[in-house]
Length: 109
Image (tube, rainbow, N blue to C red; front, top):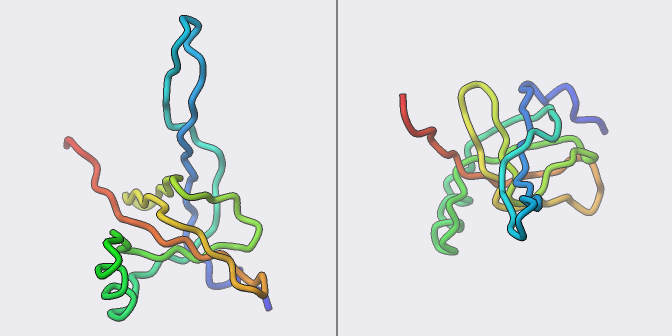
C-alpha cells in the first residue's frame, strides 16, 4: 500500500545543529535539512484529550512517507505554519511515519 497520493503538502525540515565556534564554545542554529511530502491533520478529540492528560502540546499530526528523515525536535515549515515535532512513530508495517507536532506561531509581524 502506498500513501503518496494522500500527501498533499510540501514541508521543509529544519533541524537544530550545534557547531564549535572556534573559541572553545558552541553555537546553535536551525538549518534546513530537506523537504518532505506530508498530510497534516488536527488530532481527534480523544487524541487531544489523551495528549492533555499526558501534558503534551500535541496540536497537529503529520503523516509522512516511511523513509522521511524527520526526527523529534525538528521543525516542519510550510504554508505559513511551523510545526515542532514532539515524537515520531512508525507502525509495525512500515506504510507511513506519523509525527505528532505542536503548531508554533512566529513572533513579530
